[in-house]
Image 1 (cartoon, helix red, strand yellow):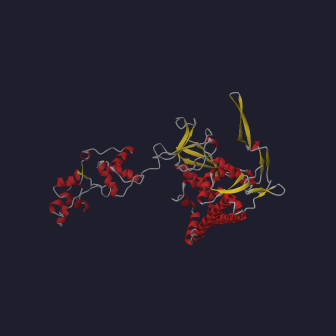
Image 2: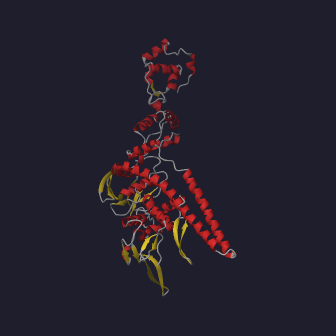
Length: 522
């Protein structure tokens, strides 16, 4: 029977780790990086990006040989799921299934069995690259990353706004909550009783905004004491990753030099007159020499251009961030995938039930502890794009004296932005009024209230607009201005005040500077 790569049979026919140091170290690297990455596909991509090949056992006329090939998904998956690397001997992991088609027996072989159905399982049978507990943990991670098993697993970590995808379970019907992404609205968690996205029979549904924030805050409070330790571990991992990359290049070069020496001995041992064999051996020797030259150039490049080490200020910044996890959590460089992996590392499941005005969450931690949270629900019509009360009141008052196309420039001059941080246009002002049920300005509306603006007041009094402004600034003529840049509003009755008539008669309201007479005020 064949032996998995990384092992060989000893003199007493017992399994022992391969004496080839390069094979042992690259297999240990695969298992160690999977604990960090948590995804078979992402691990295979990382290995290819770093230029690290994996060993493959090949059987031919010369017996069992080892070849080094670029990693592929099935190669990495086979290494991570084989219990031999956990020091266990297993027999009967696959079986056969018999069915009848057209009154003929058809046998399907290679059907994977559950662990309970394995015929033989002997733990601690030989030296393993990982422990059995780590092997068990890896199988749970791989099984949980499957996206085609419905509500049975959490699914792999993907991009998207919902941080709790795969963790939420409905407390009313027990189903796993799905996530719905919308280009212009918030992400929503939804429990569809019919398990159909097109169905209208929905059990519960709510926005992700408050729930994600509440759960993230609870997790950060729980892991805050470990922040400094994690930062120091990150610094150590970065240094170790650089050393591993250099180490793998050195081992690959050492292996290539041995293959050059072996190819040369084969070439020297052949009869020179046998050109059919000598020519082939010479070609192999040249290929091995080219591989050595390529690896030497790669290794020299790594040594000449080592990755920049952390400076003292960068180290201090990292430790400061570790002491302030909320700021690190909300940092623009922190991806949603990283946040989701952190949540899944500490949380097993979240049971959610919906009340009249609150969401009740039960957090199931990985250590079997439980935490209860209550999150307020958004009321109908509420969302996170909410304008402050002062802006709403300002637009409400401006709408009683100006049309929409005149309100927009007033708000923009004041530096007021919409709830989404955008500038104001006539369309946005109109939509805002419709949402807040503010009536549009009508022509003649001020006249019905016996109110005048600056231009109309100057016409009534027979003076320039600057004269009216001077009367207002001197406190002679009462006027109301909603905000800076908004028009002055003057009541008709105030034009007949004795103080206004005396100021006009005495000429005190006339501007002494003729240049100001040419100024235009609204």
